[in-house]
Image (cartoon, rainbow, N blue to C red; front, side, top):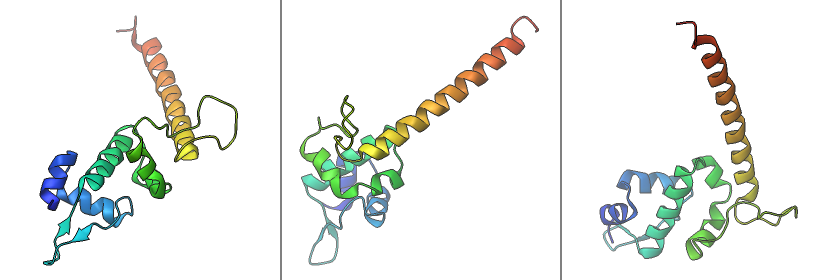
Length: 128
């Protein structure tokens, strides 16, 4: 399918597909005899996984660090990205270290925002 159709099927834009290809998240698709990109269901599924991971807070750079293993998530959508609930180092799925670092960054941001909210609430309630 052409880029516009593939983008629509994946819930994104043709520009995003080109961007993912440029960044190495999406392998270059086949080309037609006239040089147009020709996407199949596998590429559309991969873009859906990429978009889901971006929505969950990972960055394009995060995804680049395990782009070669994104296909594992396409093959098995229930596969975990991070380390399973165990203390076994290296027992995680694709991008376990990246996911662990991103979760730690989110936890730190939640802590910062909670302190900010608490300080603001203590400062303003009862004084206005």
